[in-house]
Length: 152
Ligand code: SF4
Ligand code: SF4
Image (cartoon, rainbow, N blue to C red; front, side):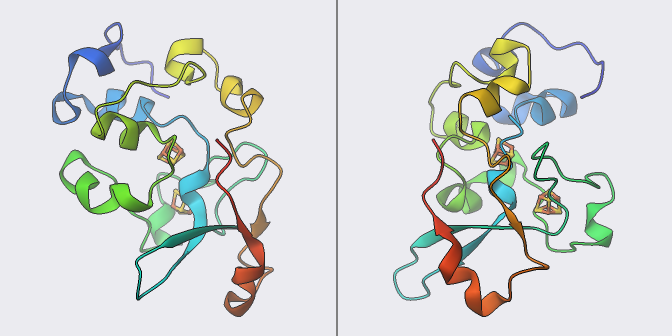
């Protein structure tokens, strides 16, 4: 995270499209759940989460190993913005701060912006720490065997 100053509880005072870039980035709690591969049913639109992670996800920290230049390796990694949240919210994790605020809800008490430490996400059991397998190791046709419930 940058050292830029952020106002107190800015997420309660500002709309998503009023936030500065550092504020927007700070909303991410580092759960890693959006970096898991999903299976979407073409007929029903249902989305199933798997524990097969993107090649760049660090299973220990739950962070992207090359966040700044990730598009060199994963060109289709989504750049989430206030303007595209409505098209992505349906598949985003239930606890994702962007989704919660977009739905008009509060941040959970374990969010790092409230606790002051990234560890609180792991301690609350809502991250994917130590539970993923890399997409390098599981062929696409086997992903169905790795479907999980979202840790919440
Ligand atoms: S699901 Fe949301 S809060 Fe969790 S890592 Fe992804 S963007 Fe961040
Ligand atoms: S490229 Fe990085 S941010 Fe994008 S899905 Fe993969 S691990 Fe997550």
